Length: 140
Image (cartoon, rainbow, N blue to C red; front, side):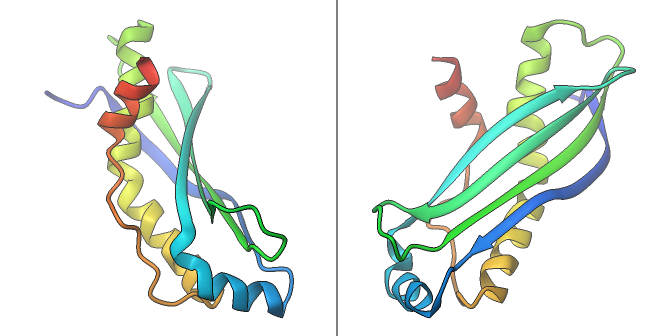
């Protein structure tokens, strides 16, 4: 199956790494294993069969504590859709599955660098993100 889109640009649209104080830093370092990755995708149509695909990635504690740190990044990909793609049924998998799958290795690398530079060394995500599965779950 050939791609029905072309990536024109990719960039980090927004990034936030919040560790409010030393106590939060120490607490987060000790409890980073309780942090989970959350992903959301939204799309903004542009002119001339182009669209902006935003992948929002958040890394936050599963427990609500006042000393938690918080990390978020929005990665934007601008895509040009092929002229023969016209229906929602054709567009949805491109925006919610194909584009995110293609750019995710860059997103993960950049996000892990942010965590590393924020003082949280050797963080890794326990499993790879399966956008095909996320897409199926979203449809249900």
